[in-house]
Length: 369
Image 1 (cartoon, rainbow, N blue to C red):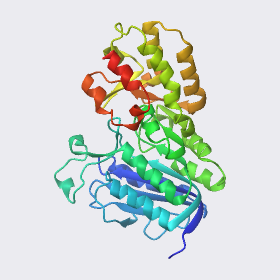
Image 2 (cartoon, rainbow, N blue to C red; image 1 turned 180 degrees about the horizontal axis):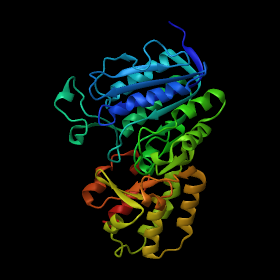
Image 3 (cartoon, rainbow, N blue to C red; image 1 turned 90 degrees about the vertical axis):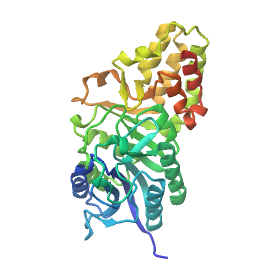
Image 4 (cartoon, helix red, strand yellow; image 1 turned 45 degrees about the vertical axis):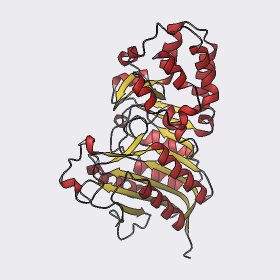
């Protein structure tokens, strides 16, 4: 068996760009390559492009291997498949070891439980399907992705330092709870993001010079280095605290559902500046939403204040607003969102997710609908 090559830090990118993001591949790879200047730092990128039949994998080191930046073709055509993502992480675990690890998930986000779409999962399908034809996109389920990451952590014998969900609107308590066991920290955005982002070169230069840093410091450097026009807000969350979310949220929900809820119309959330529609979901800022709910029914603030104190001082490590946000309304957001179902059908749609079996949020929404 070939001995695994060891590094201080390994950062893994999953780039499902078999869609309308395909043209951004070259710029991102070049920015990463320019920043990797330490022999103790390795970046691996597995990617899928629209007019490319198969997924490719490229290894980025200080020396820049002969196949950089395009890498080598693989036997997979579907970047939304569990099999492809799992094989990628298995291959990495077999060939490399590291003191610290991070995974960055690029690409689009869809509904609450969707991530990483592939516009054409069969060879030559790009000849029949437009890259921005979202009706044809196949999505990966976030619970599936989280499970594969946890299996990877078991293989390497340690937790990831950082998971970066570099996707629009994945800064929800539902998504973060789903990924709670995948890493020590998660970096995300609760609102739409720009692309291709610009932090890569600066961050990898910094990481190469500061190899002892933690995932928390790496995330804070990513937040600091990205161009302000590329995001509205970044939220860094501590996953050990996210695991406590049900026990912190349920007392507030119990207080709410014990009251008369007739005066609350969830449909009113649509017009609030702290809420927006994304795909089939109505996402709302967690802090603003529960302030609104409790204000409508006039309950004492203690249960709300206790929950918000946990949210802002334990769960959220850092929330950073962009000085030049994409959306002016983003100033009404405070770090994390939740999905607000507006119909009974949308209420039950995500009931299968672990998040909802561990807390009473569905019970509250059923009472409100």
